[in-house]
Structures are given as C-alpha cells and as structure tokens.
Length: 499
Image 1 (cartoon, one colour):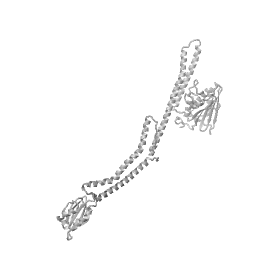
Image 2 (cartoon, one colour):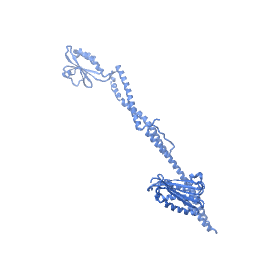
Image 3 (cartoon, rainbow, N blue to C red):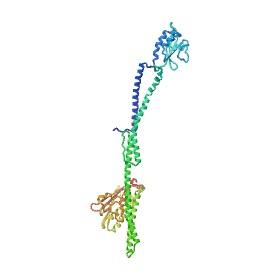
Image 4 (tube, rainbow, N blue to C red):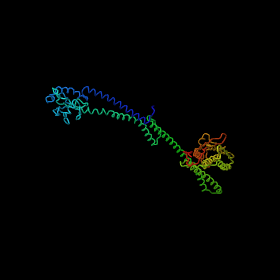
C-alpha cells in the first residue's frame, strides 16, 4: 500500500501531471496538424503563404519583354492571363502616376518620385502587400509600373474554404489551453474520488452517531494523509463514545439496581413498623404495658434503620454529583489520630473489643501537617471501623494502622472477625452487595458503607482495597496522595489531583 500523501503534495502532483499530459498531447496534436498541412500543401488543396510570390518572377519577365503592350490596353488580356485571378490583384500606372487599368485599389496614386523609389520593392497597402514592377519599352525606356497586390498567408485553393483555413489555426493556437482544461477535469475527478470516498464514509458515520448507532468502524483510505488523520480521529471519537455509552449504560443499570435494592431494604423496616403500629392500636390486657415498650423499641430500631439507609443514599447522591467538592485542610496528623483513637476505643468498649493504633511516620519532615478533607476521611474511617465492630466477636481485636511517607498516607483497619467471602471479595465495594457472612445485612446496616468509602477515597485521588488476613479476620486499606499546597476546593472525580 502506498504511503498517503498530504493534500499539498497530492495537489502539486496532480498539477504537474496536468501540465505534462497537456504538453505531450499538444505536441502530438501539433505533429498531426503539421503532417495534415504538409499533405494539403503537396496536393495544392491549401496554398502556402508565399504561393503568390512564386508567380512574381514569371510576371516580371513578361512585363520586361512586353512593356509596350502592357502600358497600353492592347496587352491587358494577355497580362490578366499571367496574373492569378484569385488572391492577386494588379494595376498598371504611367510614370507620372496616372491609373491606366487594373483592379487593385490604391488609397492615392503615387507620383513619379515614389514610383522610382519603390521599383522592384514591396510596400504595405490596404490589408495586403504591393509589389512595384517596372514596365520598360523595347528601347529600354521606363514607361511606368505594374503594381501587384497579394497577401502573405495560407489560403485554400478554393476561395470558398478560405474561412475554414483562416479560422482553423485558432484551435491550433488554443490547443494547449484546451488540453489543460480537459486534463484538469480528468485529474480533478480522480483527486475528487480520493477525497470523496472517505468524506462520504465520515458523513455516513456522523449519521449513524446521530441515530445513536455506534456499531460500525471506519477504515483509512491510504490516499490523503490529512483525510486519513481525520478518519482516524473520527474513529477514536466513535470508540470513545461507544465506551462512554457502555459505561453510562452500566452506571444506569447499577443505579437501577441500587434503587431496587433501596426499595427492598426500605420495605422491610416499614413493614415491621406498620405491623407494630397496628399491634399498638389493638393492644389490651394485663401485659399491654410491657408489649407497648417492646413495640416502641422495635419501631424505633427500624425507623433508625430506614433513616440510616436514606441518609447513606443521600450521601452517595451528593458525592456522585459533578459539582461535589472536597474541602482540604492542613491536619495535624498526630492529633487527628489521637482524637479518633479515643472515640473508636469508646465504641469498642461496650463489646469488650480491644482497639489498637499503629502509627509510623517516614517523612523527611515529620512535623508538617498533612492536607486532606478531614470530614470526608473521618467518614471513611467511621464506615471501616463500624464495619469491623459489626463483624468482630466479643473480646476481639481491631487495629488501626497508619503509615505516612513524603508521597502518601496509608490507613488500614484490621480485625479478627469472620473475614470476607473469598469467591466474591472483589465485589465488597459494590452497593447493596449480598454475599457471604460479612455481606449479610444485619440490623441497622444498609450495605453501602464500603461503597461510600470507595467514592470518598477516589475523590481524594486515592485507592482502596479489601483482603482477608493470613490467619483470621479481614483488612481494608486505603491510600491517598499527600497534597503539597492548599487550594484544592475544585477537586472532582475527573481531576482528583488538580490542586
């Protein structure tokens, strides 16, 4: 396959070919015309430009020997037989300039001095050349002059065809321009076909995209570099649109699944609440008071469950908005860890769970604050720690690991609970995922905690992962890059490290 040329090179190439082909065709045409003209000249069908000059020596000799009769009307008939009747005219004048006879038109008769000056020479007349021949008597005296008028141009032997011969030379002169027009049209069509096919392909692709049909592909023509580049860019755009639409369809499907799961999860506590409210309405007897308190506790618990579920859904909707922005602040990491450790220790105390903290700072300057959105990172940690508390047995252990380098902050929450369901561990960050022991929803648990944690970590430009410990329990670890400066108010999911 030939290497595609640029439009400039292709146009220059076609232009050169137009000139070369026009020149060659012109030379061939001129050669054929010259051959035809030579043939016509040889057959005396066309007379050459000097045809009439060939008669002048014969006429001159006749006038020299028959001068006395030429100067008088006696020799007119004989003289006219010597002069061609078509294409040549004559006039006999005396030495004094008097017109004697003939059909040559003269603007004004020449005087004796002009006649003597012009003898045996040619002078321009009215649209023709006039030849002055001397008329000499038998005694050698100059009697006058014979003026012959003729044209120096190619003529037809048949005067009726003279216009064809005269105007026939015009196409001869215009032949190069006619061939340039012809080959410009031919090469222009060829050049147009090279561009037209890929452009039609692009128009076809645009119509398919307009109809939201992306199941097609474009091929490069290999003829024009710029057109191929445009086709390649269009194909890249089509593939990106196809991927975007697939992602959009996937998100839409996930969103539909989330709302279906939300409706299902809300139905359970609301059904329980409705049943207990109806029970309260029909309550009577000796044990009504104790049942009354029991029913209120169930109502309160399920109301809190529905409220938490709606709160989590509102948080997801807020985080997924394009307008969502983080609010990063410089944080004293040691103080931050100390405050949260005290809070988590208090939460674990009710179930006799031991909460430990492991902190390691490997930065070159360890006393510098760390920049992140503390409110959102606290949300991540709260979800991870509450998840571990939920699945850690009484008298168990939870460890919060923090490691800081000059590039990133790593935090991990480890427990000695039941661990993740191994076949589906990669799905634990999906919303409403129902899997093994750790994914079964318990009371007050919406199943959205890890999904919210993942969204917030990604907003910080970080990563989050879940794994089972070698012995027992599970670990959820996330890392976020350290921001060197403030001004991160415009952080979005599309540009999490734009500050």
